[in-house]
Length: 298
Image (tube, rainbow, N blue to C red; front, top):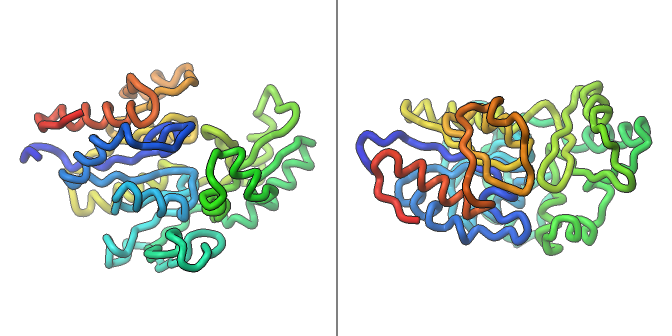
């Protein structure tokens, strides 16, 4: 790493970004991940996934940085990397809203410092029921589904579907039957109750006023207290990533089958990857790092 190279922080969405939308594979991103590991660049997962799910993934990817779960609902600093608690954090050992089966990978090594920004899950499921009745929509949340249905809708195996069901701050849901052409009443119903609905790659999400950007802001502040030259890179592919992209010094939209009219006007410095998913993530990250004269390999 060159002496004039900034200290980069990489904030990344998962599905459709670092992970392939259909297979959940990340092999195409391995060159950039390895380069980040060698240069000490934190890769910070920011996802709608639960902390149980993210804990599994970060171990498979050999990531030791903080991570942000459920669209900014919770921020977690692994104790193995951060022995001292960040400001406002409390110790937490459980993987999610419920405990994982004893001895599973999600239940081991989950000692973290936790900062909660989201609304408790029980309140979210209650409100989703109210909205269902008010709008007379066939809304079905994760809390209404068994593991078989979650597995079918997500493409996850049953073990990983169990981790996906360990919600703390966010209720994913679908609208069955005839979905409304205009989703505005749905968003207003949540807003009237002080909550927020976002749209991800597969599901709507009901949550508090937390978002990915707020979690990103807190983690960035912690790093900048130690690295004045920290530069933030954010990568995502869905509307629930847009606030994070807006806040980043270097925002990258990972190409997908969807188009977002006006996003370039909203985020003028936005970059768009040439490829989809982890291949796009890999080339975008290596291209950014190479701009400072570093020798990188795709």
